[in-house]
Image 1: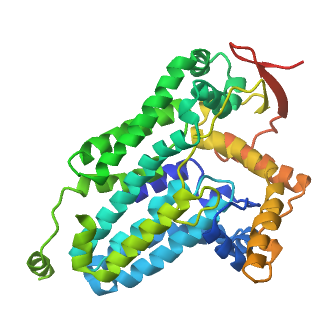
Image 2: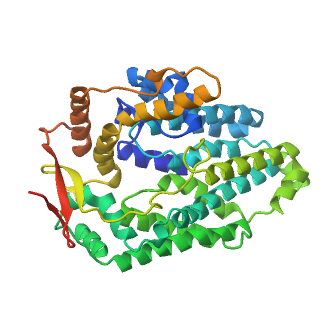
Image 3: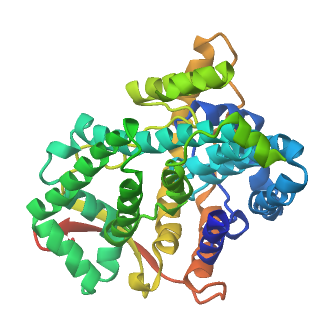
Length: 266
Length: 161
């Protein structure tokens, strides 16, 4: 459901591959991507733009295949998910080589088929929690990076970020209330810095998730707040991370026993 | 302890989890290159000061508030990415080809890592791309594009003469 809500949102913003119709790519510092690039699939697509629609159809349509088969043919679940993983990896790797957005934001699409391919309930439980740790690591290390690379110790940090991020917006509409709000923050670097420092501390607090699941609901709610405020202040949508965030809501379930699994199977 | 439970359940799954964790920590410990799906999440972590001058592109008649962040990025990030195309060559020569030589393999086909798009080809494509984005599919007359230098005055961005 979440996947298709995001699919509609992306389609409405012209972000499907057939809508972007890219004609070039940017190589990134990713060893796995370099291996894929050797196959030339990303350049083949550039020279065969009619295939963009087929790529979108596979990427957005394959979950329906999974949904159709998961109860009728549970034994085929693993095979369907292997294909799903392959489709997602090829699509996301190519899509993010083109001038679209970052591959990091698509982490959920690269990993979630692993969860849904679990044949046993207990495997599902453990993979869910493994992905939960990945999501917690994402935010915790975002905070660590701000300490490590020095952004946290620069009082002008938020002012610099806002001007860098919004220069085209500010020049386009200097008298708009949004521009005035951004300019106000830039002119008051201490206020901006407090936002940046507060964000860093919030990210570091995610470490609590490595030790207990008690606060997962709070972490989820705080993630939603982050999503909205980051969209409003930075105009950066992190909506693609929502599927991973949802795992926090399911972490409270206990490890199913083998007898429970057999009862469900019957 | 979570890993203990995984070990008791299935040793292969335990090994996969440990391998994933070790790989992610290795990527985290050595900034620079990543290996999907092991990334570093350091956006806006480096020190960023206010610059004295900003080079800003804008389109005549384009009102920012009428577009979603994604539509706005489609217009401007695409331009930035095109301007960064020459970096493909640098990454290939200084990193990819060098790495392959280091491990005793011949360098991969450069055409898969570097792509030349002449400016007139890009401009023709970009013009249609922007028109589709700004008018939700219906083509409009061309939007004049300018790149100017702006200085930060302490209050706002002002164009340099």
